[in-house]
Image (cartoon, rainbow, N blue to C red; front, side, top):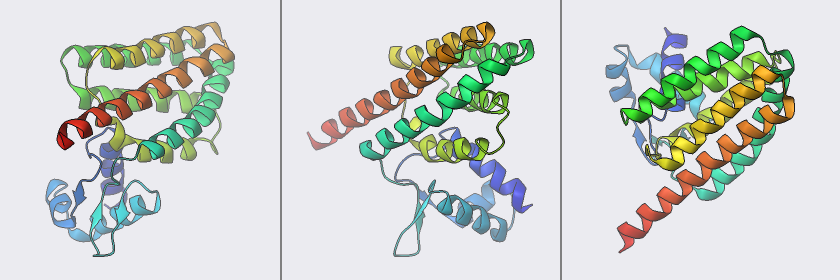
Length: 214
């Protein structure tokens, strides 16, 4: 039960179901997952350790507030680690890996057309996870997963517009590079996907902040 609750909560965080600054309560999550408070508390504790959530001095827990500097920092590290994973995956790419990436890209595109950001981010996470696993580097996988946990809430601030579509086009270029077994092309495509998403999130946050001040 503890692992089931943690996995479900972590998946929700990575898919943008929680937004920056949102308070997290044991009671609400226990009701959501139809379980007792104990496994929820343990899952929250693990996510605080992984910096997806933060514990405040008043003993409450929340998703970290939006921080452009944090987004940029995560972007740099993700480009380095996931770029490496993509390059290694390209060296080992099989037709099955390429087919799965293209299938998930189609799910993303369909979700984009429906303006369904949550489903798009679920597919996005699955696509990136597929590439990480394709790298066949077990030590790299948990590092990529922890970074995804930290960036997930920021991705939840995106909107289905032309800039988000541009990030999906990079997934198409990634699939092409994997099919060619082109490590450099795969590295560049995943880095552009990550960087474009980060810039998009920061720009949207800046515009919302300006409107709220005005």
